[in-house]
Image: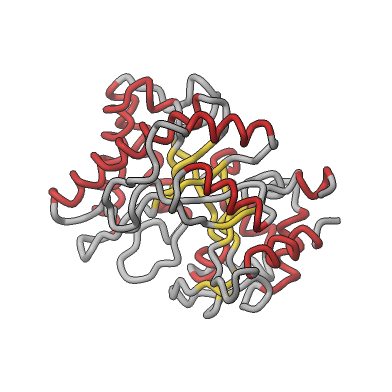
Length: 306
């Protein structure tokens, strides 16, 4: 792999079966230089294979191999905007445990983020949903205190399916502002003291953004300019690189393999070569049609680099 190719941080969402060392083995097989994983079961149970033991060793190997930042993914069952207070309480307490686990990697020198779907307001309205999400995530960071400086939380841009919050850049910005306001009231810094970056950032999912109605194909620069105006490109820390089955404004959230959907290869070529995005970790969440699918897609994306 050339230095130019290695400078692109691309990988997929990997299974955690077998523990920390197996994650790196799987990443090697697909030719990745970053990856994602669930820090616990997708259904919310604590992971039996991922413990604090071995996390620092993995981090040392990643640093030695010059991996990009990892983008762990919070379980889908978390709903920080739920009507049921018990569901919100579960999500808050579980995320605190997740961040404490992942901090062993970050503190050993390997950058890592925790990506989260903000939540669904389930009929309460987006204003209430965004408020509840801000309240919940600020509680997480306040509870962690100085430990919260270790692993920033990334809000994922959503497609707008059902009652999802985060379907517009404005909703994402509202959640961030709500979190920072509550942190300020509690006397907790919204910046990482260890790494000098915001504790709340954003993951841009290419499929979700298109499905939400932002025309990445025909107005790439305009969409990024709007994101910068509303949220700020300094908040953008990761990309979920997915093509879209249904396309612009569909609000469907159906991922397609790279180049086979409504975004198409010309979009991914532009993204890979845009200096505002090309240094960010890019995580594939596409369908594994064969055991080689993600290896082939990573190779394809690298081949688009000029």
